[in-house]
Length: 127
Image 1 (cartoon, helix red, strand yellow):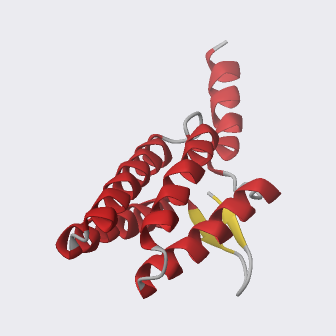
Image 2 (cartoon, rainbow, N blue to C red):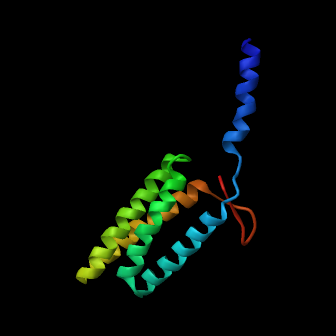
């Protein structure tokens, strides 16, 4: 019986570490995130871009919540950072904009470092 249980446990391990193809919806979310972050870095439509980012990450959070604690935390951090960014931009608070932008960028990087596996120059999988 112990041998059977041990065999089943080892058989399950590859399932836990296997890469996953991102869904078309996830790819779309990440492309939109990149475009919004690009606008924010250039100082274009910062408040509107931040509001869209916060709304977008409500959907991204639904995707990541059952998959990963890191993904769950970073999506929440991006949402709160985007909310702070929108408020700072509306108030004309340059220091607040810079701080919130750093929070968002750091959160994106954390999730990418944890969950993004480069397959080719243009293709990634979720790990």
